[in-house]
Image 1: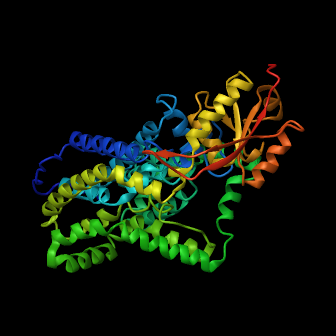
Image 2: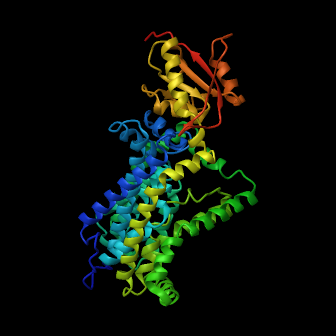
Image 3: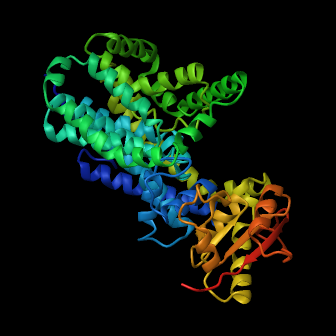
Length: 507
């Protein structure tokens, strides 16, 4: 049986990242603090992304699934905000912590396949890509996979190495949670299966209880969601299918941009490798590639590259619409792939380079955060110029003065309604899309009893039409206009129409 590689020589000790797991933990804590602060500075005066607000809205209403995605990202957000205040910084702390959990999993997996120095170099190479820092700050159903995929792959490798019942069950549970994060995880699980067939211990593995216990645990974890999906007409599958209903040339063009962008996101890590290996870079990459094509290495190549290859295949065969953000969880094994079969002589030098560069990246990110905030405002990005908090404050004040009860239900133009749910002190339930199917926590009886505030952008004709179905006959909407203020400069004004649907107050 192949055992994980251990240190054959004494690893070089880093100046600020030691060899012990405690040092890795301290590094990850620093990573979390830095990027929580970076994101908070960038959005101190603006609002969270609507994907984040959606996760909060759903997390307030625990379900076995939601009309767009399976439930794990919402569950995590819901649990998080049972402990933390509903503020920007707390949400960015969740985003950064989620990324750090993924980095910990990537390091733990690398530690089983490389020596200690190589594992730390692999970790730091990931930190030189934006997947686990800048892109991770937008918490959603894509970013939750940053934490789930590395640990799922780790449990898979442990299960095939040890063939124990314990690791088989753990692999199945994590695989189930990954699938409940997003169905895209099927590509990781497919890669795990193909990798198991190529592993030198494949026969012993499938003669053990581990893979069968993994399948049973997986089925047990996802079964409530499957039941929910069938009972509700498979809405998540319909939403996923909707992403394939675009012209093929448009899908192909977006995929090309996504792949090129993903490659560009690795340029800093590639440059670090180039400086460490120097003129030997080409020969070392060639040696690594030959090692991965050898019988002993094919399983690792499939595990690491399988999700990317299957993603591209899904574009060509299933017309799936992808983006660089969509693919953020799939590269966690790429540094291991490069380092596993290349020369280890230069790895200490690579570790020293990546140490310095990661610290420099942190410093640049912190220093430039206010400038990024200003550029977002001047370029009029949605979260920068949409007056979501301004609307929330005015809407809550209006509801209190006219109705006098805590705001319990909100609806309207989606990004604004979800923002009101997050920023309003009472954190009202959001009536998603004015649909009782999309928001099963809302009923006609509940609206009649508790009332509802509807906030539509004036130009949103669909919202205005739906609001008219719930507003009192003959009651005109209340017109309001708001603009974001950034250091004394006003953003573009947004015109709103507010509808107050008063409830009976009867229980």
